[in-house]
Length: 81
Image (cartoon, rainbow, N blue to C red; front, top):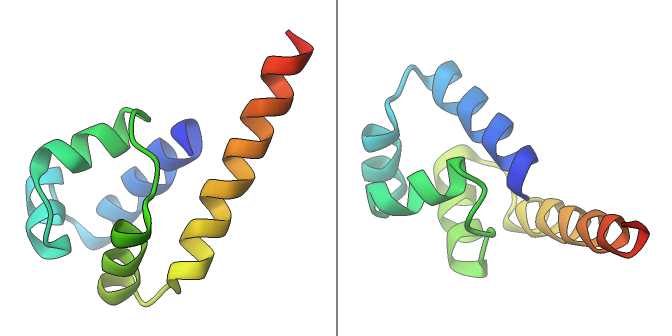
């Protein structure tokens, strides 16, 4: 979910008026994990989807479906190039 996650998580943190460190603490994960998400270097795992669901009220399935959609777009882009 690289580019999408960068924009999405930045918007969420802006909306909640949180720094990445505050977001990580509320999410129950490390600042490094949030940094990797923001840099597009980490996909949304099942565990992370559950934490996001608990924190934001957006279902884990939604987070996993967003990740799956991104992965599929990425694969199709790689095949074209």
